[in-house]
Image (cartoon, rainbow, N blue to C red; front, top):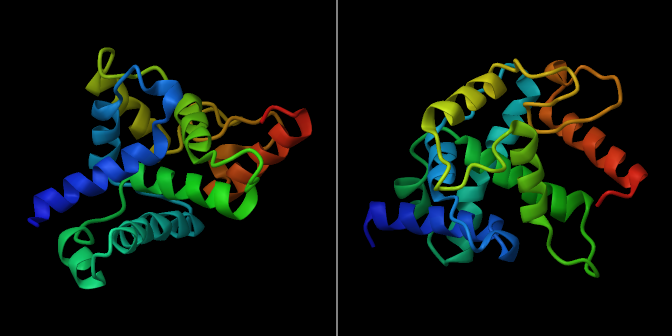
Amino acid sequence: MTRNELIDQYFDWIYQLLVDDRYSNKSYRKLFARLYDTEFTYTIPMDGNRAEDGIDLRYRFGRTHFYSDAMTVNCLDDRPCSVLEMMTALSIRCEEHIMDDPDTGNRTGLWFWSMLVSLGLGSMDDEKFDRYYVDGILERFLKRQYKPDGEGGLFTVHNGRDMCRTEIWYQMNYYLSEIIREGDF
């Protein structure tokens, strides 16, 4: 298998984790490709953990498909974490470590799509894809220039906290606390 074939397989694997039956009549590949091509940068040091989770996603993929770590290192682990990888890894961590409910099933895609909606990218399917709009949204997110309640970032909450100054892990937990309290999940 060539490096490019493995990268394509990895991208398809991520896409399949996140796009379920609710979105099957639309393609979001252009948006996902842009998220994958955009480096996840951060200004709050603890958000480095989210980048590490995104890098670890590459090895999870490799183990799932029985590729050696050496192959993963050589073909996938040669660049910084992307926004897509960070968001995917965060969605998986949310589902598996906090919100796991066997009766409900796997909601990894739900957590991912709630972040896309908060960012303002939820309707950006391939037919509506606007690279300049997406790039502006991502720049605002990465520079933490979104609203204090998190709107325009990954999580929108109504708890009075300044989400622009809060590490992503705590943002997610504030969001989950709010939706549990309101019964919106």
